[in-house]
Each structure stands twice: as C-alpha cells, then as structure tokens.
Length: 358
Ligand code: PEP
Ligand code: MN
Image 1 (spheres, rainbow, N blue to C red):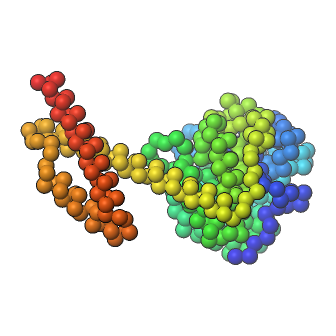
Image 2: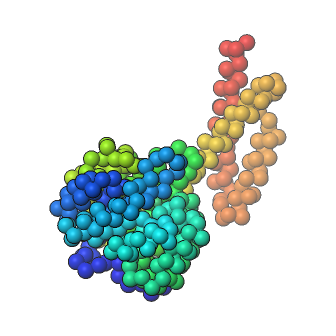
C-alpha cells in the first residue's frame, strides 16, 4: 500500500494531530461558535456530523445538507480544514461539491461491505482524504476490507480511527477499546496513520483524558475528540462532549513521550496483558456463578457438596490439556486447587442459606 501523507498544508507533524468539533452540527450558531473557539485554541481540523446514524428511530438524525453551508462558513471564517461523516453515494457527492477536506466513514457503515463499496465507487478519482473508523464489532478483517476498498478507489491520503467496539455487556467503556486490534492493524500496515476517538470509546467526559494518554503512549498519530460549545445541551452524545476550553486543558496536560521502539512495544504488550486479564476475570466470574448454581442444585437434591471423584478428574484432566498450550502442569494444578476451593466455599454458602430457611 503506497500512501501519501495525511498532513495538509499548514499542519505540523507533531503528535497528536487533533480533529475536534461537535458530534452533530445543530444550528449555524452552535457550529460557528464551537469552531471559532476551537480555532482560537489552535485546532486545525473541525469535525461535525450532519447525517447521523442513530441506533433507534426518533433520535436526532442530523440537520442534513443545510449543515454543509455552515461548515463551509467555518472554513471561510476560521481557515480550519473540515471533516464530516459520509455513509452513502449522495453524501460523498454533496461533500465533494461543498469542498469538505476530509471524509470519515462511520463505524456502523464500515460493517457493511455494500455500503463501503458504494462510497468507494463515489470516491473514484477524487482528490480527498478519507478516515475509516473501525466497524462496531471487533473484526479486524472487516476493517481492513474497508481500507482496501477505499484504497482501490484511488484514495491515497488514508487514515483510520479507532473508536472502540460495542458489546452487549455493560462495561466501564461505551465501546471497549480492545487496544490489541488497532495495534495489530499497525503491525500489518505501519504506514497507515491511526487516530483514536476517545469520545465514542469512553462515552463520558471523565474517560476522555486517560484514553487520550493511552493512545499517545501507544504512539497513535492523532485524536478525534467531540467538542461542543455547550455540551449539556447537545442534541446527540451530550455526556461525552467537552467544551473547547476543557479540550484545550486536556491537550495541554497530555504527556507526549518520545518513544523508542522498545517502550512502544512494551506498552503495547502491557495493553494486551490488561485485555487478557479482563477476559480471565470475566471467565472466572462466570465459572463461579455456574458453581453457585450447582450448589443450588445439590441443595435441592439433597446431595453432598464434595464429590471427590469429580475433583480428582478435574485435577488430572486440566493439567493435561494445559500441556498442549505449553503450560506447566504443576502450575495448572495449583490454579485448579484454588478455583475448586473457592467453588466449595461458594456452595457451602448456598447450603448455609438452607439452614435459615428450614
Ligand atoms: C460520530 O463520530 O459522531 C459517530 C457517529 O461515530 P461512530 O461511527 O464511531 O459511532
Ligand atoms: Mn457522536
């Protein structure tokens, strides 16, 4: 893949390259006031959604094409570059006509190869920059597929945006960062600049700063952050938007480390460990819940807690299975003894409950 620099005239190559602006353009006044405030703090690229993909009908679906006029005004009055989300052939056509500088493809669009191909066809031969968000589901191949479609349309100023991955379980993050996925993308395509969108990962204001720092520690190139002149009144994503002043403060506090290859790899590896540990804890929690249910079953059927035969079977089979994954059998035995001990404790609690009931 041969790419051209994502930097447009007047942008310096210092990390992070920041894109900021409201989730949605709502009124001309809100769009311009936000943009002017951001520009006065040195932000060079202004984002605003005008066609909003909403999970459910009835939400604010964006102001539509009228917003293009406001964004053109932003460019004329502040000199900022502009970027909007496109999801269809018509969006691309209108954005190109309006002189938008950078287009981004949203997470809900990237999941659909038909939609991405439609956008790619509309972009054929256009001289514009395109940023591709990760799909909502953690599927790296799908993300790469979208990148390839846009590249094949002749787009050379290409970048990606990591905005996290949705999950049905309630978590700290609105969209889990699963850092190992963009890290793997970087390993395979080191030439593609990566932006982090902490707003859609975090889903609330407090998480934006630590996420930006993590993205910088992982040597990401840029940040796309939602900023609104009056976040609490925002018509979409109110809880995750920052005022331009809060954003400025946050950016000034970021520590940009001069990274050598070694520390970058170490940080990347540590994020992998964090992700794996999160998974291990989730599984342990699940296992203990099942243990508890077994306890309930035993109580109902008047069975004893300890089945020595079953315990022996686990202690024998698990170390054997572990061997095929290069795991030391003594280590696995120790872990399973501890897990079993905790299972027994859980089941004793269930039995004890019965004392009070009877
Ligand atoms: C957005 O950037 O406002 C947006 C809709 O993001 P995503 O596609 O990541 O959900
Ligand atoms: Mn948003």
